Image 1 (cartoon, rainbow, N blue to C red):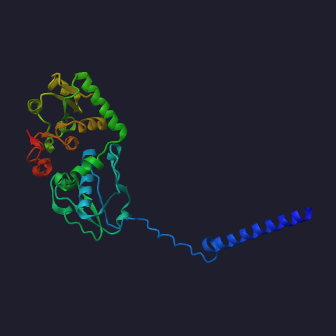
Image 2 (image 1 turned 90 degrees about the vertical axis):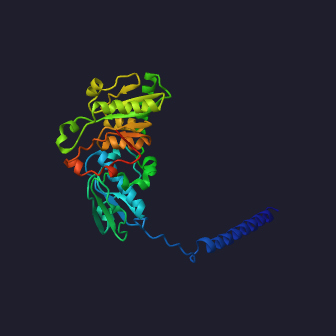
Image 3 (image 1 turned 135 degrees about the vertical axis):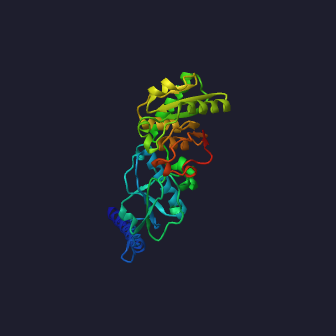
Length: 318
């Protein structure tokens, strides 16, 4: 009886083994056998964007760089090219720029395009040669270079770093509480002095005291509840000479990036002069009042500025 049981067990084991071997062979022939064809790997493409590249010079300081960057984005959009940065810029310190960094080699063959005036528009970016790369050169200080991407610049490109945005909003909320104006319309006021006072012969001009009073009264008449936040590189002079009404707050920040983020986060703007002030007003997206006496006519600055190209027509001169 024991011998029969062992024989049956051996037969059962051999049967299971045979079935297993058959299944392995079938599986191997279909999925892993010598007849399997390996798929070809995709071709290595170091640059997935076949479009030609366009880049820009970075001359001057933060405000100048913002003009140059914006012109780059506008030109790339207009000509269906890929914008890249090959030069360093300090505006990385403020914004989460959604743009690729590269080198001149990424341009392959390229053509240089030079501006005609630092603060005037020319048509050089209207019809770029898209058969090769492009290198834009100049200060490029005209709203007309990037009017086609106005909203995109504010919503996508000039987005403050989280820590800077938080610091600016915390500051604004504290100012609202201090002045008991939680629902007030915010108007930024920029007072540029310093180097602009010392370089009048070149055409740099500072806005006179009556200009600020007139501009602030414009907003007081337009809005019943308004709060002014004044930023300056000479806050002592500003406090001694300008409005000290309860609806005016003077910023004592020494961080230029933070003051810029505060002004850009307001609803409207009273400009002083210069590209720093210009861009704070542009980013508010609201009403912007500017001093019509900048730059001074018949000077180096004045002769290199076309006002209708420099100041957007929807801004308000005083």
